[in-house]
Length: 183
Image 1: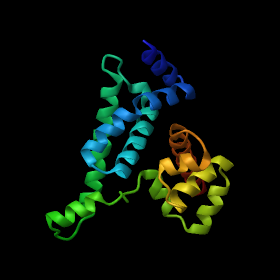
Image 2: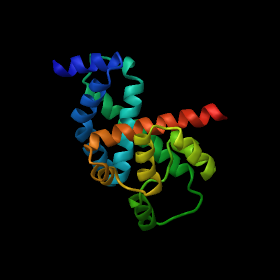
Image 3: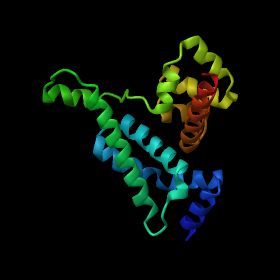
């Protein structure tokens, strides 16, 4: 019953409910993706993207279905999109061994926000980052400039992993909005 209450609160924009749902379902979605991708970085990125899409579209969630089933369906679609992007960018023939090696490398396919962020020149990007609140600046800097994992960031800023994930998600969205507003 508590899950349904949290979902309803989240539909009304309650950030605490979003955090509760992220914490409650994170391991399930992440574990599912880890089995599919066999890559921790890809699994983290897909899971973050899954929750981002789920929270953006939570008003469309149909309570006749289990919430975790809905999240897994979103995760599968995010993963399929990621694979399509990877496959469409391959122009050369590669062996199965090379394919497996490439598959194990951290995903470099950018999300929509990442594309907006990385297409800016560095000095302009730094100016945009400075417009963010300091705690958002910090997580962007640690993730994208120092290339720290989510866990390393959590340790560095002495905050729970779930807080880091949410901060990074919000920071990317805010930065993408700033960049688009300046176009």
